[in-house]
Length: 238
Image (cartoon, rainbow, N blue to C red; front, side):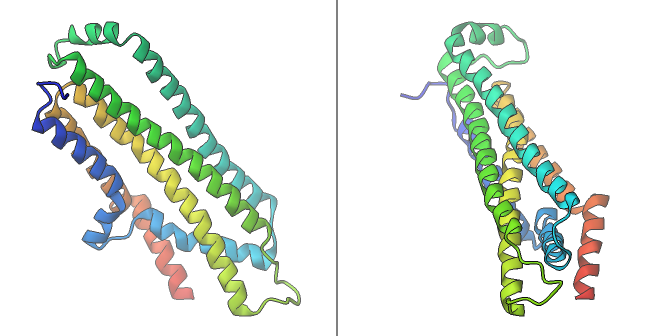
């Protein structure tokens, strides 16, 4: 039985939050723009190609290690946050009483408070599993990178076979980082979920703002423009 103060506006705020998060990449397809993450696949392909030409270097190991450590850090940090959230469940009544006394928090029932709290926990839980899955994909990518042939001398690999190995390795590495970025975006929408305690209007506003910020960073920043120019230059060379 849903609480009586659980309105259609609350449903709209929750649906908008989850839809914006999960449909993030679809938004760029609809507006005909490629994200930084998509453009970087060209850069990663070039990196993998360089490995097959010159062999693996300590710098390559540092780059891969940095990526792995970053994913592992966010996974561990999210797990700590989740542990804190689930520990609040034990004292949910006292937390509800404390927050109900705040002037900027809407006067809602404890049932609706629990639903809002559950949404926040769900968002962070999905982010946590995204980090874990990204870490698992990175393990696969590392194995593929380590098994790449170095073609500075005679090789048994035909050109098209080598290109396929490069493409497959690039795809696995890119997919792992896409999953990682999905989890990172979850933090933006976790903040929006927190504003659901204030009001559904606040949640909708922050969701739209977070989405706009993410889109802007992928399209109009100097970083995005520089990466775009780099990719175009590499494509012209090829």
